[in-house]
Amino acid sequence: MHNRDKYHEFVTKFLHLAGEVKIVKEDYKTDFNDKLFFDLQRMMAVVNTIINTYAEFQKICAQAAHTLQTINVTQKSKSLQRNEFNIFKQNTLTLATKSPIIKKALSACPDIQCYYCKEKDHIVRNCPVKQKSQQMITELTENDTSKPSADLKKELHIDSKPLSEWSEILECSPAGDGPRPVLCHPGMKVMTESMLKIVSQSILKHPDPKSEHQADVKQREIKLDKEIRQEHQAQLCRLKGTSSVMTPKTRQRLT
Image (cartoon, rainbow, N blue to C red; front, side, top):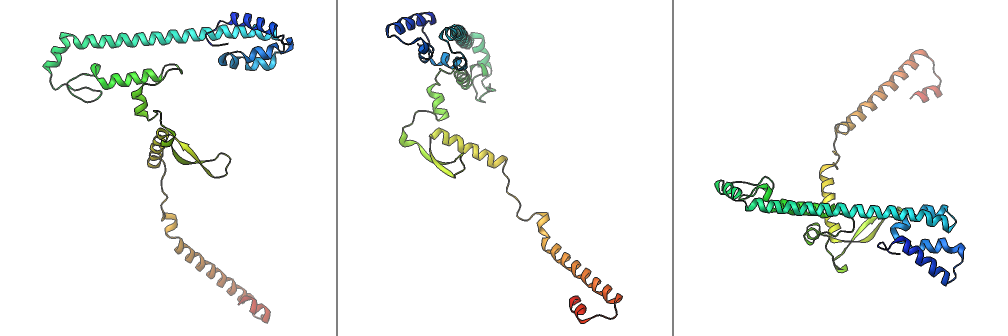
């Protein structure tokens, strides 16, 4: 079954062929699901694991096919309306440019400047740079089946490149076994390098090798050692004052 095929015709054809090749009825559901197109098969993935009989599965599949058809029609209608609006807008801008009033206003102000591209001799509604940018945005916001224009491919470095122009880079492995070499598209390489440059300039900071805490660490160690020696001497003096007679072992321990 293809996306453009009608569901009820597909069911009739499937039952006819299944009867000719004498498929076991217990295998109807599995064989029927395998012949659905991808989008409908994806919608029926959960149902396929729950429902066991072909009759119940086919009934739910009919509802899903109708829903999917409605979604596709709605998307095509929105895309058509968007294209018609863009054509109308472009024609309006063209007519406005040819208007004698606009031409007279532009000739009266030879130093007029566009607010969008900062170039002279035209206004923002006639800016070719803005029109090109809007065209790119329109192409990017269309459905997933649309393809970007050649100019957009060139600017984003995503045009088709032969395998010989791909470069090898090192990528961190998710398994934690160290970096591994992978093939990188030229456009991906440019994007990665620009992102690394932005991160290194805005986020990463090199630590100060001589911070305020580490600057006087040697002086603090000397001071601490001096305080320990003074405390030790004070303890010796207190012990000597409390015991006038000391054994040789005690004197040796104190010294």
